[in-house]
Image 1 (cartoon, rainbow, N blue to C red):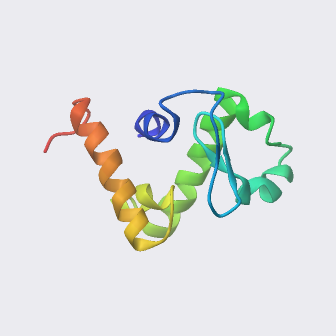
Image 2 (cartoon, one colour):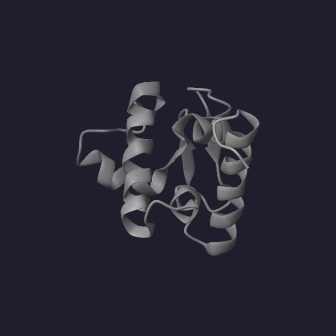
Image 3 (spheres, one colour):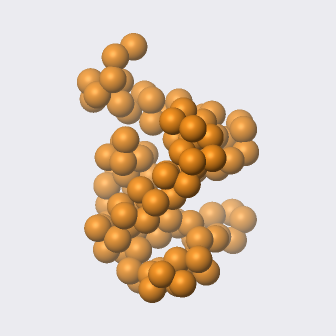
Length: 108
């Protein structure tokens, strides 16, 4: 799942930075959004640290786990990694599902 998310977010590029239309910024391989920086800073994780692949993946796993705790082990949780807005959430979950299908990780 995390590999598929990394592909969707940055094509696996550790140096990826994306400035969003809403003024936020996504950092690193897993494109961790700047809205999480305040919480992450409390754990000693800076935006610079998010550019390290291991840190980025670790934070992504933490974020995905938060969404799994909220939505259960569902595609909604996967989609909520990207956005909790239903339309965006569902579109993202479908994209991840498609990646996993193409890679043969899951069946139809």
